[in-house]
Image (cartoon, rainbow over all chains, first blue to last red; front, side, top):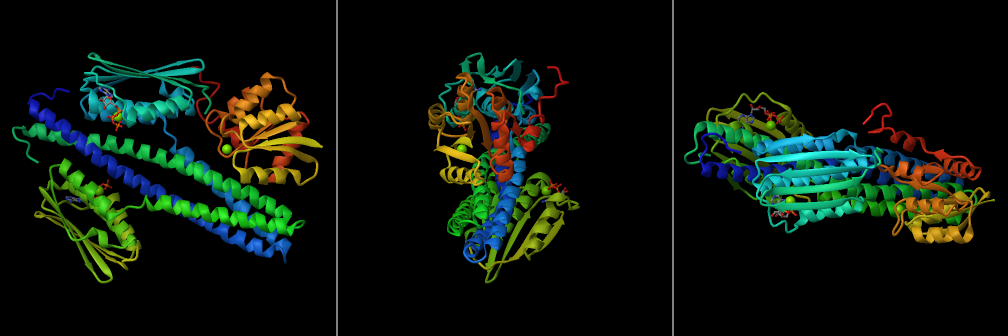
Length: 219
Length: 219
Length: 144
Ligand SMILES: Nc1ncnc2c1ncn2[C@@H]1O[C@H](COP(=O)(O)OP(=O)(O)OP(=O)(O)O)[C@@H](O)[C@H]1O
Ligand SMILES: Nc1ncnc2c1ncn2[C@@H]1O[C@H](COP(=O)(O)OP(=O)(O)OP(=O)(O)O)[C@@H](O)[C@H]1O
Ligand SMILES: [Mg+2]
Ligand SMILES: [Mg+2]
Ligand SMILES: [Mg+2]
């Protein structure tokens, strides 16, 4: 990260600004995303659940005097719920993190911070389950490299073997205390929940985060 | 935004990096947010809608043979739908943009870009409807100031009168073509949809975006 | 009569699902259980024709119960019902010898039809879920 002709103070200033502006951009983006999803859901659910509660009430009233109509109301309710479920399923699939997408974002973050970024291995051959967990791991590990490492380069290695996959994020920075904050703790929890293992090495030659996960290759 | 001792090239480089890193941070943040919300909703909705569809089917079948049981099933369905609505509303309320929160984000974005930021008026007295639209307006207008204006300062003015509210975002930058891209177009559409008016002035002394909205003050 | 143990951790769903499949009269629910351990216990004790089970439950998942039933060579056949076809579940289910894999909100005729089919020695997989198996990363033509 040595911009030609930039004084040391200028470099430090640049790094400070990068971090502040990233925080700001992050907040804005999170807000925008929340709002978009909020609107979608509000529309979808508001509509379905309101319909369900009204029709179910109506059916309950009809049950004693007009069972045929009551039955029809209840079938409508079941149908509405099933249709909403189809939409929710589609929305959720669109939301799952993917490793290739996350690699692009990590490449951008590193390039912005002047950290060289290398990838070895094929991110696109993983099953969606393992892919989603590894995407989260990579996001947190690379964010830490950018924020804490002072590294000049960051290397991602993806190694697949039958039935399992290993991801490592290695930097050549200064290492750190690695006293686990919410970032590393959350990561550890998610990896464990998915049946994987997490290994962290940090020293004066840099930091390495290695995750091994079972991978059935299933979607 | 004049870092002492920084050459012109260095400043340009810094600005480029700021934008790139903001993009990266934005992508990362949006992904994270989507995933978090996705998980929560997935669970809430999946549970409720599944329950509704199964119980409604059961009630429909019972209608002919056991009207008392059928009625009870339908009341359960209505109850479940109502409870889910309350939960969804609570989740969505936390998601919709609010002007005070958005002002904080704008202050951060400007400070990161070295632009002085001033606010006059009370953002916290608005009704939620007007507040959400103005929050969106401000987000887009301030993003434009940071990206396009070259300004040294940005001023936000919020003026409330009985029944209406006016927000202006003024910068002292270079002005611009103001040929409307998706940013200004989207903003115009939302303001119009909410019954407000949008006015844009741009010249060599800077740019001013003024929105006037009806405001009932209702929460 | 087809004898079924039902396992589902959401008690309202458990009750409604059990009542629903018993309506036609040819299926009898011999036990309703709310977690994996209780389901396994009921299967061992009652030796039903079928276990109709949710996946995500406290303690042991429906797939883990299916693993054990297969390992112990019990005669009970397993039908899984789920709300979302999560990544990898279907393949795991197949590996555990599961015979039916359906959406919980499937129309009841489809559900009871599937139960009869599996009890008779067949298989039943919801088309929505079967399709998802081939969506990503599993193209037989791509050689890693
Ligand atoms: N690549 C790295 N190089 C140097 N130090 C690191 C690296 N990754 C983590 N650390 C150290 O480990 C600590 C814990 O990391 P962790 O991600 O848990 O928390 P954090 O990044 O400080 O905050 P957050 O909870 O927001 O992620 C960091 O504060 C830092 O000191
Ligand atoms: N405060 C400003 N100062 C100078 N020029 C501006 C300002 N605001 C907008 N512009 C000009 O108006 C154009 C249109 O703005 P608009 O927000 O619609 O699009 P954009 O910012 O280029 O892209 P996006 O769709 O991402 O917002 C900008 O490209 C820019 O040239
Ligand atoms: Mg961290
Ligand atoms: Mg814009
Ligand atoms: Mg469950």
